[in-house]
Length: 140
Image (cartoon, rainbow, N blue to C red):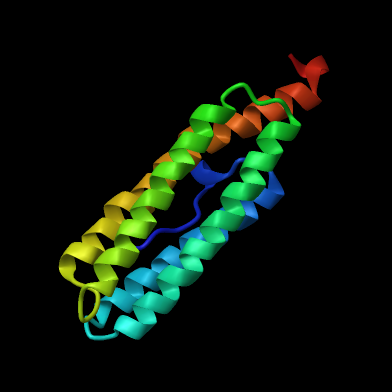
Protein backbone atom coordinates (compact mmCIF):
# COMPACT_ATOMS: atom_id res chain seq x y z
CA UNK A 1 0.00 0.00 0.00
CA UNK A 2 1.55 3.22 -1.17
CA UNK A 3 -0.04 6.65 -0.95
CA UNK A 4 -0.41 9.53 -3.33
CA UNK A 5 -0.90 13.19 -2.56
CA UNK A 6 -4.46 13.58 -3.82
CA UNK A 7 -6.79 16.56 -4.02
CA UNK A 8 -8.52 15.65 -0.77
CA UNK A 9 -5.21 16.26 1.03
CA UNK A 10 -4.76 19.83 -0.22
CA UNK A 11 -4.91 22.44 2.54
CA UNK A 12 -4.33 25.40 0.18
CA UNK A 13 -1.32 26.38 2.25
CA UNK A 14 1.60 25.86 -0.14
CA UNK A 15 4.21 25.37 2.60
CA UNK A 16 2.15 22.75 4.40
CA UNK A 17 1.06 21.01 1.19
CA UNK A 18 4.67 20.84 -0.01
CA UNK A 19 5.76 19.31 3.29
CA UNK A 20 2.88 16.82 3.20
CA UNK A 21 3.96 15.72 -0.28
CA UNK A 22 7.48 15.14 1.05
CA UNK A 23 6.21 13.20 4.08
CA UNK A 24 4.08 10.92 1.91
CA UNK A 25 7.01 10.38 -0.45
CA UNK A 26 9.31 9.43 2.44
CA UNK A 27 6.74 7.08 3.97
CA UNK A 28 6.44 5.40 0.56
CA UNK A 29 10.26 5.15 0.42
CA UNK A 30 10.23 3.50 3.84
CA UNK A 31 7.60 1.01 2.69
CA UNK A 32 9.69 0.24 -0.40
CA UNK A 33 12.68 -0.43 1.85
CA UNK A 34 10.48 -2.84 3.83
CA UNK A 35 10.05 -5.00 0.74
CA UNK A 36 13.65 -6.14 1.17
CA UNK A 37 13.30 -7.69 4.62
CA UNK A 38 17.07 -7.97 5.03
CA UNK A 39 17.77 -4.28 4.28
CA UNK A 40 17.92 -3.07 7.86
CA UNK A 41 20.39 -0.32 6.98
CA UNK A 42 18.11 1.12 4.29
CA UNK A 43 15.08 1.01 6.57
CA UNK A 44 17.02 2.64 9.43
CA UNK A 45 18.15 5.41 7.09
CA UNK A 46 14.64 6.04 5.72
CA UNK A 47 13.07 5.94 9.18
CA UNK A 48 15.69 8.38 10.49
CA UNK A 49 15.00 10.81 7.67
CA UNK A 50 11.25 10.44 8.18
CA UNK A 51 11.66 11.11 11.90
CA UNK A 52 13.75 14.23 11.30
CA UNK A 53 11.42 15.55 8.61
CA UNK A 54 8.36 14.88 10.78
CA UNK A 55 9.92 16.96 13.57
CA UNK A 56 10.66 19.75 11.08
CA UNK A 57 7.16 19.65 9.62
CA UNK A 58 5.38 19.55 12.96
CA UNK A 59 7.50 22.47 14.14
CA UNK A 60 6.45 24.49 11.09
CA UNK A 61 2.78 23.61 11.55
CA UNK A 62 2.82 24.43 15.24
CA UNK A 63 4.57 27.76 14.59
CA UNK A 64 1.90 28.61 12.02
CA UNK A 65 -0.86 27.70 14.46
CA UNK A 66 0.61 29.91 17.16
CA UNK A 67 1.04 32.80 14.72
CA UNK A 68 -2.66 32.75 13.79
CA UNK A 69 -3.96 32.08 17.30
CA UNK A 70 -5.43 28.74 16.29
CA UNK A 71 -7.77 27.67 19.12
CA UNK A 72 -7.10 23.94 18.62
CA UNK A 73 -3.33 24.28 19.01
CA UNK A 74 -2.92 22.14 22.15
CA UNK A 75 -5.04 19.29 20.79
CA UNK A 76 -3.22 19.43 17.46
CA UNK A 77 0.17 19.38 19.19
CA UNK A 78 -0.95 16.34 21.22
CA UNK A 79 -1.85 14.55 17.98
CA UNK A 80 1.63 15.29 16.66
CA UNK A 81 3.06 13.71 19.81
CA UNK A 82 1.13 10.52 18.99
CA UNK A 83 2.90 10.16 15.66
CA UNK A 84 6.29 10.98 17.18
CA UNK A 85 5.69 8.19 19.71
CA UNK A 86 4.80 5.73 16.93
CA UNK A 87 7.94 6.65 14.98
CA UNK A 88 10.07 6.10 18.10
CA UNK A 89 8.42 2.71 18.62
CA UNK A 90 9.27 1.84 15.02
CA UNK A 91 12.90 2.83 15.62
CA UNK A 92 13.00 0.59 18.69
CA UNK A 93 11.35 -2.27 16.79
CA UNK A 94 13.83 -1.98 13.94
CA UNK A 95 16.80 -1.78 16.31
CA UNK A 96 15.72 -5.06 17.92
CA UNK A 97 15.40 -6.94 14.61
CA UNK A 98 17.54 -8.05 11.69
CA UNK A 99 15.50 -5.92 9.30
CA UNK A 100 11.97 -4.76 8.64
CA UNK A 101 9.47 -7.44 9.65
CA UNK A 102 5.88 -7.85 8.48
CA UNK A 103 4.79 -6.42 11.83
CA UNK A 104 7.06 -3.40 11.31
CA UNK A 105 5.66 -2.82 7.82
CA UNK A 106 2.08 -3.09 9.07
CA UNK A 107 2.82 -0.57 11.81
CA UNK A 108 4.25 1.85 9.22
CA UNK A 109 1.05 1.51 7.20
CA UNK A 110 -1.42 1.86 10.06
CA UNK A 111 0.31 4.05 12.62
CA UNK A 112 2.20 6.34 10.25
CA UNK A 113 0.70 6.41 6.76
CA UNK A 114 -2.98 5.98 7.61
CA UNK A 115 -2.56 8.24 10.65
CA UNK A 116 -1.01 10.97 8.50
CA UNK A 117 -3.71 10.81 5.82
CA UNK A 118 -6.46 11.01 8.45
CA UNK A 119 -4.64 13.82 10.26
CA UNK A 120 -4.22 15.91 7.11
CA UNK A 121 -7.85 15.49 6.05
CA UNK A 122 -9.17 16.45 9.47
CA UNK A 123 -6.80 18.40 11.64
CA UNK A 124 -4.56 20.11 9.08
CA UNK A 125 -7.39 21.14 6.78
CA UNK A 126 -9.14 22.62 9.82
CA UNK A 127 -6.10 24.80 10.53
CA UNK A 128 -5.96 25.92 6.90
CA UNK A 129 -9.66 26.79 6.91
CA UNK A 130 -9.25 28.75 10.14
CA UNK A 131 -6.31 30.67 8.67
CA UNK A 132 -8.25 31.41 5.48
CA UNK A 133 -11.27 32.70 7.42
CA UNK A 134 -9.01 34.77 9.67
CA UNK A 135 -7.18 36.26 6.68
CA UNK A 136 -10.38 36.85 4.67
CA UNK A 137 -13.09 38.02 7.09
CA UNK A 138 -14.95 39.77 4.27
CA UNK A 139 -15.68 36.38 2.69
CA UNK A 140 -17.69 35.16 5.70
